[in-house]
Structures are given as C-alpha cells and as structure tokens.
Image (cartoon, rainbow, N blue to C red):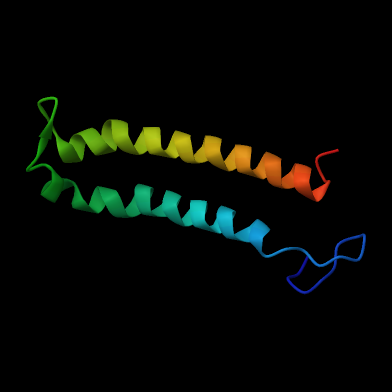
Length: 87
C-alpha cells in the first residue's frame, strides 16, 4: 500500500501508525551499529569490575534490544486493536 492510497474501507492510513516502528528501527540501528564504535572509549569506566564497553556490548545492548522488541510488540497489538485489524 502506498502512502497516498486508501484502506479497503476508504479511509486514509494514519501517519501515527508509522512513526513508532520507524523510531524503534532507528533506535535498534543505533544500539547495534553506533554504540559498539565507542567500546574503546567506554572501557575507561568500570561496572562490576568489567569495562563499560564490554559490559554494554555483552549485556546492556542485548537487554535494550529485548525491551525494544517487547515494547514494539505491545504497541503494535494496541495499535491494531484500535484500528480494528486485530480480528
């Protein structure tokens, strides 16, 4: 469906339904591709006797990605229910 096309009931799709998935995809990309670029800089700090860069790559990013996936799924379910497509 293109941006200007109407749904089967003739209504225009709402732009608000596209903002959150785009935001989560951008956040996902930053966590996966940008944060690891700063590992050497972040290793100057320690958390639980581990360098921060290592800690963020091994634990922090994985937890953040799981949270993003859960929040995105919950949001999509509510959005579908409001749009009536969750039948």
